[in-house]
Every structure is written in structure tokens, then in C-alpha cells.
Image (cartoon, rainbow, N blue to C red; front, side, top):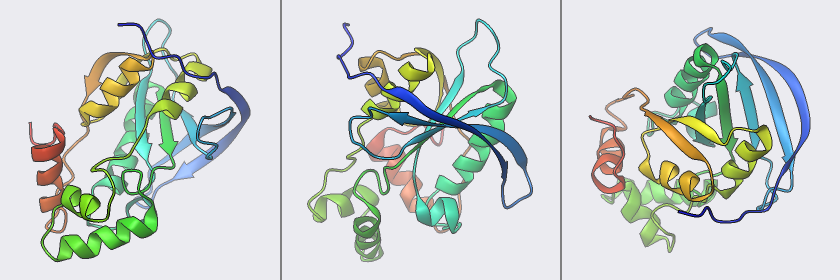
Amino acid sequence: MTPEPIPPAEIRTEVTVPLRFADGYATMARVVSFTGLVDDREHVALRLGTIPAGRPPLVRPHSECLTGDVFGSQRCDCGPQLRESAERITVAGGYLLYLRQEGRGIGLYAKLEAYTLQDAGLDTYQANLALGHAEDERDYTVAAQMLHALGADRIALLSNNPDKAEQLDRLGIAVTEHVATGVHLSPANAGYLAAKARLGGHTIFG
């Protein structure tokens, strides 16, 4: 299959940032910003660990989740996935792409509105549809642009979401290996995870 043509992006800035998570885990990141991204948003790549020569980097495209990543919300598994990814990528060597795609691309306010519909009985996908959005509005063109700019055209993908692999492959990023994240189950997110597995095809429960 011929990859879809996409505009090139370029590295804008690289800076070293020491990271420390709430549980005390610490690592060093090389944070990379870009110019030329198609949506003009401020996505960043974190280079973690040492990428072994001749081996594809381990890459996690992680969608921003203010409630989970910053405030530790139990309604999703985003915060634990972010923490897990930072450590696993540091060990293996690769990139954590932090993508400004709150609420599967619908934005923070709409995500909070979707939560109220979920409290009334809809699942996470039905709630998006009820608000006039698609089930998942994320487009990974910017992720492919970032990886091309970083020289990472072949990657091991750290994700449970088959759509990420399909989109990246279509955009010229060869996924040589699929690496699943752990299952971060809590009483508050059980229905959310079940919907992702049942309706989104996520490989969460094996």
C-alpha cells in the first residue's frame, strides 16, 4: 500500500526536562517541539532512554487527558497508562508523543459533557455521538509527521488501540511490533474499559 502523502514537519526546539511522577518514579526526557504540524497545535515528543542501534524505538502516542494525567481521575486509565509508558519507554528507548487530543479529539468541555451522559447510562462512545461528535475524532497525521521528523519511520507501538496502528501505517510509519499496555482497572473505569474493548477493538482484556 502506498502511504498517504503528508506535509513534512521539522524539529523546532529540543530541551532536557527531568520528570518525576506522583509515585516517585523519575526519568530524564528530551522534549521536542515541532513546526509545520498540520493542525497548528502544540504537540510534543519526549525522547526517553537510549534507542538501541538497529532496533525500532518503542513509541506511545498518548492523547492528552487533563482529568486523568494531571488530576488522577479514576474514570479512565489515561494517567496510569502515561506513567507506565514513561517507564517502559525509558527502559526500551523511544518516544512518548503527547498529543493534544483531549476526549478522543472532542475537547475538554465536551468530554465533561459526555461524562454527564455516561452518568445517565450511555457508554463513552454513545455519549460522544449524542453530543454530535464521532465516536473517536482523533487523527494521527501529526503523530506521523512528528515521527518522520524524528527519523522514526519504523516503530514498536505501545498501545491497545488498533486504530493507531492502522492510521500510522497508512501515513508511512511501519509498525513492526504491537506492545500492549497493562490493564489499569478500577471500579470507576470498568464500564469505560469494557466499552473500549467491546466497541473500539482495544486489546485490553486479552
